[in-house]
Amino acid sequence: MHRIKKNIIIFAVLASVLASGLSGCSKKTADDKPVDIVLITDYGTIDDNSFNQLAWEGMKQYAEEAGLAYEYYHPEDTDTDSIMAQFKRGVGNGARLFVCPGSMLEVPVYNAMKKYKKASFILVDGLPHSEESDEPEIAENVSSITFAEEQAGFLAGYAAVRDGYKGLGFVGGIPIDPVIRYGYGFVQGADYAAIEMGVKVHIRYTYTNTFSDEGGIEDLASAWYEDDTKVIFACGGAIGKSVMRAAENHNGKVIGVDIDQSGESETVITSAMKDIRSSVYNDVRSFFEGTFAGGTETCVTAKTNGVCLPMETSRFEKFDEESYEAIYSHLVDGMIVPYNRTDIGTCEELTLVNTEVTFIEY
Image 1 (tube, rainbow, N blue to C red):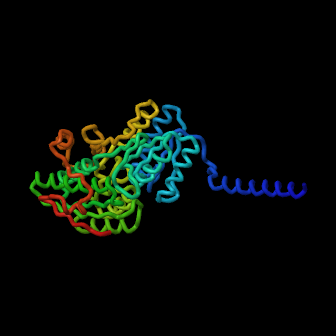
Image 2 (image 1 turned 120 degrees about the vertical axis):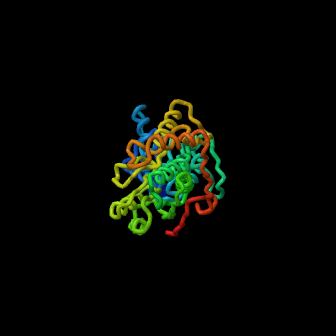
Image 3 (image 1 turned 180 degrees about the vertical axis):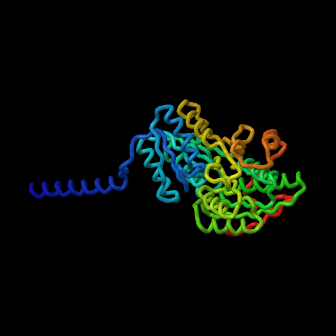
């Protein structure tokens, strides 16, 4: 009897230890709480003055209007496992909907849509696909929102040249599809204006392979400004801060990205914008109102007023509202269709007439 009792006690202790260890592996953080909606960030943060912030603001607006519990999770790293851990965390906290901004979440959303079939996902700036293939697969519990960045970039390049700038620069972050489309559109818009005006334009072009504010990017931009570059399109989250500092120290100009960045620096003459906030707000609302467009991709374009330049806050000297409306209408009616494929190598392979592009390895 004593031996049996002792074994039972030992087993109970071991079970308690194992349970404690297992609970430690999935233990909630101190700030975890029940939620209806979760936003999972990519490289950026919800105050990055870029698409993470816009997606957060759109989600937050609807959640507060509808009295829903909402939160954001920032993965510890950028690998798929780290992001999947945040999906697991959200599902454990009761989340029914995940907002996922950035192409970095394409593979994690693909995995999550199959693993958590009772949850739904809004993927912004990307299409879900497996690790092994780039072929997109959008399940019924996923809505993908993409944008015609090439149109926004086209408007920015066109406006810069029409405003009198002939020495331009494009500093992109990680060369993911949205960044590439911005850059290709920028080059094509500049060339379109150069042909109209009968002038020659030179564009320095690079990708920094980061979305972070780094001294090396500031040095690069400074060197460009010290030569013949007058305005740089800074396309990649916090790298804009690096370019703005360089512009402030070298009498240069900057074109912002995603949101109106005119308030960040007097050097910002305009911004190539896409309406992420409203797009996310509308998709979140559709989910909770029972009209969720699962299984589809929605591409937001000029035709739906989803891309633009903020003319009210732009600091152009020659390019005016009438000129803007004229070129914008050509994007809407399809008279101008910027090339938007991202698999052609570098923008030097685009068909250009009056524009020379110098591609620079960072």
